[in-house]
Amino acid sequence: HSSAWYMFIVTSTAFGFSLDVFCFIFTMIVTFSLLLLQGYSGSQVGLAITTVMSMTGMIQWGMRQSAEVANQMMSVERVLEYTLLPPEDNLCDRGLITKKKMKSKLTKSVDSELDRLPVPAPKNWPSEGTIRFRYVYMRYSDDDPPVLKGLDLVIKSREKVGIVGRTGAGKSSLISALFRLARVEGVIEIDGVDTGSICLEDLRKNISIIPQDPVLFSGTLRKNLDPFNEFSDDALWAVLDEVELKDVVATGIHGLESRVFDRGTNYSAGQRQLVCLARAILRNNKVLMLDEATANVDPHTDALIQRTIRTKFAECTVLTVAHRLNTIMDSDKVLVMDAGRLAEYDHPYLLLQNERGQFTSLVRETGRAMHEQLFKVAKKAYEELHGERL
Image (cartoon, rainbow, N blue to C red; front, top):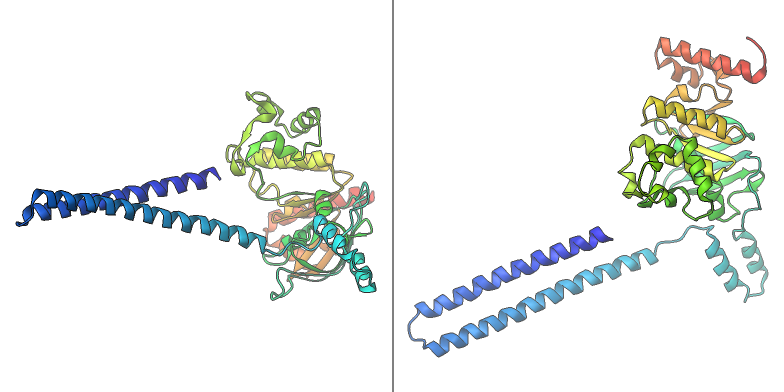
């Protein structure tokens, strides 16, 4: 807001200065024209100059007011445009308003409409983290073709699932479907609760995500970790210690009240990612989404994030969208997406047994040496999971 207002002041000043220059030049032209021409007395020249100065003053005032009116009306136009944006379907406040309107009508159709309105999520939901997709289709608008097509699978509680596929296969669209960021057809259940039947606020509050591009807001570090003031200072310092940011924050003058610039530009990429990780640890949700969280960080931060996820989220269901296969080879299962459909879904070691499988093809494209290394990691993970040596 401050930057926009600053630009408004600067442009207004520049516009006023240009008007002043124009009026000065016009007044000088009129003055010297009357002085050079013969037949005009001094009183006539003075009257002409006075008239021109008053006219230029009126012209300036009129142009300034017209520019001001145009600017203010543009602001009104923006506000009206925002008010006309259609709200999302399952917002809690929209459901309450609709219920109040419908309670005045006592018809069967109204009762059926009330049944379809969003309800608050159950207390302590989700408690396990089991996710089920039942023939899910998703599209970003009514006119677009579906980007997810007939997705049907079950992700068990506490499973670590890697999601792979080529560009445009629908990996990130799976995250959008879980958060219901687009139009979803079909049923997505978490612990037996249809996510389409509960309030969006409750759904998104109970699922954590660590994106590839970490999101930080301008404000304080405390507000970035705990926007709704739900946790104590001790809890905030504890999570900062777990992600090795406590010393960095403690050495600052303001501590938890340290300023965070817009998008966290005063923090490095690794530090921004660790702040997002600390936020996820603080929420302690049973479902965690990782959208290649370690793609833009240094090896030390990468190892720290991977280690923290394995320890702090051991009892959680973790879905990892991977562009680097080495981050998901020790997962419990790997979901291979292809053109919005489920192509393969099993343990990575078992998928590698299929010589013609898509996952095997992706692994081979990394090179012979990396292929052998990834195969060993998958084999070791399978042996540890099933307690047998192959």
